[in-house]
Image (cartoon, rainbow, N blue to C red):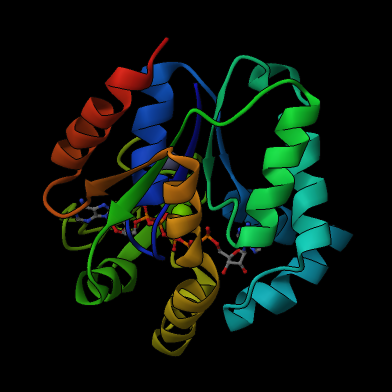
Length: 216
Ligand code: AP5
Ligand code: MG
Ligand code: ZN
Protein backbone atom coordinates (compact mmCIF):
# COMPACT_ATOMS: atom_id res chain seq x y z
CA UNK A 1 0.00 0.00 0.00
CA UNK A 2 1.40 3.39 -1.03
CA UNK A 3 -0.47 6.03 0.86
CA UNK A 4 -0.32 9.81 1.40
CA UNK A 5 -1.96 11.80 4.23
CA UNK A 6 -2.93 15.38 3.41
CA UNK A 7 -4.49 17.91 5.77
CA UNK A 8 -3.82 21.23 7.49
CA UNK A 9 -1.34 21.59 10.34
CA UNK A 10 -2.92 20.03 13.42
CA UNK A 11 -5.40 17.88 11.47
CA UNK A 12 -3.90 14.81 13.14
CA UNK A 13 -1.71 13.49 10.30
CA UNK A 14 1.11 12.43 12.62
CA UNK A 15 -1.31 11.00 15.20
CA UNK A 16 -3.20 8.93 12.63
CA UNK A 17 -0.02 7.99 10.75
CA UNK A 18 1.30 6.11 13.83
CA UNK A 19 -1.81 3.89 13.93
CA UNK A 20 -2.46 3.48 10.20
CA UNK A 21 1.16 2.60 9.43
CA UNK A 22 1.26 0.08 12.25
CA UNK A 23 -2.08 -1.48 11.17
CA UNK A 24 -0.78 -1.86 7.62
CA UNK A 25 2.79 -2.83 8.65
CA UNK A 26 4.33 -0.13 6.49
CA UNK A 27 6.82 2.58 7.48
CA UNK A 28 5.48 6.03 8.38
CA UNK A 29 7.58 8.64 6.62
CA UNK A 30 7.04 12.13 8.00
CA UNK A 31 9.11 14.89 6.39
CA UNK A 32 8.47 17.17 9.39
CA UNK A 33 9.89 14.49 11.74
CA UNK A 34 12.95 13.96 9.54
CA UNK A 35 13.61 17.71 9.45
CA UNK A 36 13.18 18.00 13.23
CA UNK A 37 15.58 15.08 13.79
CA UNK A 38 18.13 16.92 11.65
CA UNK A 39 17.57 20.15 13.57
CA UNK A 40 18.22 18.45 16.92
CA UNK A 41 21.18 16.58 15.44
CA UNK A 42 22.67 19.90 14.26
CA UNK A 43 23.24 18.66 10.68
CA UNK A 44 23.66 21.03 7.71
CA UNK A 45 20.22 19.95 6.47
CA UNK A 46 18.81 20.75 9.91
CA UNK A 47 20.44 24.21 9.98
CA UNK A 48 18.97 25.04 6.58
CA UNK A 49 15.52 23.59 7.33
CA UNK A 50 15.27 25.41 10.68
CA UNK A 51 15.26 28.88 9.10
CA UNK A 52 12.16 27.96 7.08
CA UNK A 53 10.42 25.89 9.76
CA UNK A 54 10.73 28.63 12.39
CA UNK A 55 8.82 30.99 10.09
CA UNK A 56 6.28 28.33 9.16
CA UNK A 57 7.37 28.39 5.51
CA UNK A 58 8.06 25.35 3.36
CA UNK A 59 11.63 24.12 3.08
CA UNK A 60 12.73 24.48 -0.59
CA UNK A 61 11.53 21.71 -2.90
CA UNK A 62 15.00 20.54 -4.07
CA UNK A 63 16.08 19.84 -0.50
CA UNK A 64 12.82 18.15 0.51
CA UNK A 65 12.56 16.02 -2.63
CA UNK A 66 16.16 14.77 -2.40
CA UNK A 67 15.52 13.77 1.22
CA UNK A 68 12.32 11.89 0.33
CA UNK A 69 13.96 10.16 -2.63
CA UNK A 70 16.68 8.83 -0.30
CA UNK A 71 14.15 7.69 2.27
CA UNK A 72 11.92 5.93 -0.27
CA UNK A 73 14.98 4.08 -1.58
CA UNK A 74 15.54 2.37 1.75
CA UNK A 75 14.72 -1.33 2.13
CA UNK A 76 11.75 -0.98 4.45
CA UNK A 77 9.87 1.23 1.96
CA UNK A 78 9.97 -1.21 -0.94
CA UNK A 79 6.64 -2.90 -0.14
CA UNK A 80 4.71 0.24 0.70
CA UNK A 81 4.81 3.39 2.79
CA UNK A 82 2.71 6.09 4.38
CA UNK A 83 3.82 9.64 3.64
CA UNK A 84 2.88 12.30 6.23
CA UNK A 85 3.56 15.91 5.21
CA UNK A 86 4.81 15.15 1.70
CA UNK A 87 3.93 16.14 -0.96
CA UNK A 88 3.04 19.62 0.17
CA UNK A 89 2.55 21.44 -3.12
CA UNK A 90 1.70 20.45 -6.68
CA UNK A 91 5.36 20.57 -7.81
CA UNK A 92 6.31 17.98 -5.13
CA UNK A 93 3.31 15.84 -6.14
CA UNK A 94 4.36 15.83 -9.79
CA UNK A 95 7.92 14.89 -8.94
CA UNK A 96 6.72 12.13 -6.61
CA UNK A 97 4.52 10.75 -9.40
CA UNK A 98 7.47 10.76 -11.86
CA UNK A 99 9.83 9.25 -9.29
CA UNK A 100 7.43 6.37 -8.59
CA UNK A 101 6.78 5.91 -12.31
CA UNK A 102 10.54 5.49 -12.91
CA UNK A 103 10.44 2.69 -10.35
CA UNK A 104 7.33 1.14 -12.00
CA UNK A 105 5.13 2.21 -9.07
CA UNK A 106 2.25 4.55 -8.30
CA UNK A 107 0.32 5.86 -5.31
CA UNK A 108 -2.73 3.80 -4.31
CA UNK A 109 -4.55 6.37 -2.22
CA UNK A 110 -4.45 9.89 -0.77
CA UNK A 111 -6.43 10.44 2.43
CA UNK A 112 -7.46 14.00 3.18
CA UNK A 113 -8.03 14.63 6.92
CA UNK A 114 -10.83 17.19 7.07
CA UNK A 115 -11.09 19.46 10.14
CA UNK A 116 -11.90 23.17 10.59
CA UNK A 117 -9.46 25.98 11.54
CA UNK A 118 -10.73 26.49 15.12
CA UNK A 119 -10.17 22.84 15.97
CA UNK A 120 -6.71 22.94 14.39
CA UNK A 121 -5.68 25.89 16.56
CA UNK A 122 -6.97 24.12 19.71
CA UNK A 123 -5.08 20.96 18.79
CA UNK A 124 -1.78 22.71 18.08
CA UNK A 125 -1.92 24.93 21.17
CA UNK A 126 -2.01 21.85 23.42
CA UNK A 127 0.29 19.55 21.47
CA UNK A 128 3.28 17.97 23.19
CA UNK A 129 5.75 15.55 21.60
CA UNK A 130 7.91 12.93 23.30
CA UNK A 131 11.62 13.72 22.93
CA UNK A 132 12.44 10.03 23.24
CA UNK A 133 9.90 7.98 21.22
CA UNK A 134 8.26 10.76 19.17
CA UNK A 135 4.70 10.02 20.29
CA UNK A 136 2.24 12.88 20.00
CA UNK A 137 0.11 13.93 22.99
CA UNK A 138 -2.37 16.67 23.82
CA UNK A 139 -2.42 18.33 27.27
CA UNK A 140 -6.22 18.61 27.33
CA UNK A 141 -7.48 15.69 25.25
CA UNK A 142 -5.02 13.19 26.73
CA UNK A 143 -5.39 14.71 30.18
CA UNK A 144 -1.63 15.22 30.57
CA UNK A 145 -0.87 16.41 34.09
CA UNK A 146 2.90 15.95 33.94
CA UNK A 147 5.51 16.49 31.23
CA UNK A 148 6.33 12.79 30.83
CA UNK A 149 5.41 10.42 28.00
CA UNK A 150 2.93 7.74 29.14
CA UNK A 151 4.43 5.30 26.63
CA UNK A 152 8.15 5.55 27.48
CA UNK A 153 8.61 8.08 30.29
CA UNK A 154 10.53 10.49 28.02
CA UNK A 155 10.31 14.25 28.50
CA UNK A 156 7.63 16.03 26.46
CA UNK A 157 8.35 19.23 24.54
CA UNK A 158 6.34 21.84 22.69
CA UNK A 159 7.28 22.42 19.05
CA UNK A 160 8.91 25.80 18.25
CA UNK A 161 6.50 26.34 15.35
CA UNK A 162 3.38 25.92 17.53
CA UNK A 163 3.49 29.58 18.62
CA UNK A 164 0.18 31.28 17.75
CA UNK A 165 1.68 33.61 15.15
CA UNK A 166 3.58 30.82 13.39
CA UNK A 167 0.50 28.57 13.44
CA UNK A 168 -1.47 31.31 11.69
CA UNK A 169 1.19 31.57 8.99
CA UNK A 170 1.36 27.77 8.57
CA UNK A 171 -2.41 27.77 7.97
CA UNK A 172 -1.99 30.44 5.26
CA UNK A 173 0.80 28.44 3.65
CA UNK A 174 -1.47 25.38 3.74
CA UNK A 175 -4.32 27.26 1.99
CA UNK A 176 -2.04 28.75 -0.65
CA UNK A 177 0.32 25.89 -1.42
CA UNK A 178 -0.99 22.59 -0.06
CA UNK A 179 -4.78 22.81 -0.45
CA UNK A 180 -4.47 22.76 -4.29
CA UNK A 181 -3.21 19.18 -3.89
CA UNK A 182 -6.75 18.12 -3.04
CA UNK A 183 -8.08 18.90 -6.51
CA UNK A 184 -4.86 17.58 -8.05
CA UNK A 185 -5.48 14.17 -6.46
CA UNK A 186 -9.25 14.32 -7.17
CA UNK A 187 -8.26 14.65 -10.85
CA UNK A 188 -5.91 11.67 -10.46
CA UNK A 189 -8.90 9.74 -9.06
CA UNK A 190 -7.17 8.66 -5.83
CA UNK A 191 -8.40 11.13 -3.19
CA UNK A 192 -10.73 10.13 -0.36
CA UNK A 193 -11.80 12.62 2.35
CA UNK A 194 -12.03 11.48 5.96
CA UNK A 195 -13.84 13.41 8.71
CA UNK A 196 -11.00 14.02 11.20
CA UNK A 197 -13.13 15.38 14.07
CA UNK A 198 -14.04 13.37 17.15
CA UNK A 199 -11.92 10.97 19.20
CA UNK A 200 -8.60 9.72 17.76
CA UNK A 201 -9.77 6.07 17.67
CA UNK A 202 -12.90 7.00 15.69
CA UNK A 203 -10.85 8.89 13.13
CA UNK A 204 -8.52 5.88 12.80
CA UNK A 205 -11.56 3.64 12.25
CA UNK A 206 -12.90 5.94 9.53
CA UNK A 207 -9.48 6.05 7.89
CA UNK A 208 -9.13 2.25 7.95
CA UNK A 209 -12.61 1.89 6.41
CA UNK A 210 -11.62 4.28 3.65
CA UNK A 211 -8.42 2.30 3.01
CA UNK A 212 -9.99 -1.19 3.05
CA UNK A 213 -11.30 -1.18 -0.56
CA UNK A 214 -7.77 -0.33 -1.79
CA UNK A 215 -5.98 -3.14 0.00
CA UNK A 216 -4.74 -5.68 -2.56
P1 AP5 B 1 5.00 19.10 9.79
O1 AP5 B 1 5.71 18.51 10.91
O2 AP5 B 1 4.51 18.21 8.69
O3 AP5 B 1 3.80 19.97 10.35
P2 AP5 B 1 2.32 20.25 9.84
O4 AP5 B 1 1.92 19.81 8.48
O5 AP5 B 1 2.13 21.68 10.11
O6 AP5 B 1 1.43 19.33 10.66
P3 AP5 B 1 1.55 19.08 12.18
O7 AP5 B 1 2.61 18.09 12.44
O8 AP5 B 1 1.61 20.40 12.88
O9 AP5 B 1 0.09 18.49 12.47
P4 AP5 B 1 -0.44 17.01 12.31
O10 AP5 B 1 -1.50 17.03 11.25
O11 AP5 B 1 0.64 16.02 12.18
O12 AP5 B 1 -1.19 16.89 13.71
P5 AP5 B 1 -0.82 15.99 15.00
O13 AP5 B 1 -1.10 14.56 14.70
O14 AP5 B 1 0.50 16.36 15.57
O15 AP5 B 1 5.91 20.21 9.12
C1 AP5 B 1 6.61 21.14 9.89
C2 AP5 B 1 7.46 22.03 9.00
O16 AP5 B 1 8.43 21.23 8.29
C3 AP5 B 1 6.70 22.76 7.89
O17 AP5 B 1 6.14 23.96 8.36
C4 AP5 B 1 7.81 22.98 6.86
O18 AP5 B 1 8.64 24.04 7.24
C5 AP5 B 1 8.61 21.69 6.96
N1 AP5 B 1 8.16 20.67 6.01
C6 AP5 B 1 7.63 19.45 6.33
N2 AP5 B 1 7.31 18.77 5.21
C7 AP5 B 1 7.64 19.57 4.16
C8 AP5 B 1 7.53 19.44 2.75
N3 AP5 B 1 7.01 18.34 2.16
N4 AP5 B 1 7.98 20.46 1.97
C9 AP5 B 1 8.50 21.56 2.53
N5 AP5 B 1 8.62 21.77 3.86
C10 AP5 B 1 8.18 20.78 4.66
O19 AP5 B 1 -1.99 16.49 16.01
C11 AP5 B 1 -1.96 17.80 16.56
C12 AP5 B 1 -2.47 17.77 18.01
O20 AP5 B 1 -3.84 17.37 18.02
C13 AP5 B 1 -1.75 16.75 18.91
O21 AP5 B 1 -1.61 17.30 20.19
C14 AP5 B 1 -2.69 15.54 18.95
O22 AP5 B 1 -2.58 14.83 20.16
C15 AP5 B 1 -4.05 16.23 18.83
N6 AP5 B 1 -5.03 15.41 18.13
C16 AP5 B 1 -4.86 14.67 16.99
N7 AP5 B 1 -6.00 14.05 16.63
C17 AP5 B 1 -6.93 14.43 17.56
C18 AP5 B 1 -8.32 14.13 17.75
N8 AP5 B 1 -8.98 13.32 16.91
N9 AP5 B 1 -8.95 14.70 18.80
C19 AP5 B 1 -8.29 15.51 19.67
N10 AP5 B 1 -6.97 15.81 19.55
C20 AP5 B 1 -6.31 15.28 18.51
MG1 MG C 1 2.75 16.10 12.10
ZN1 ZN D 1 7.77 8.50 24.58
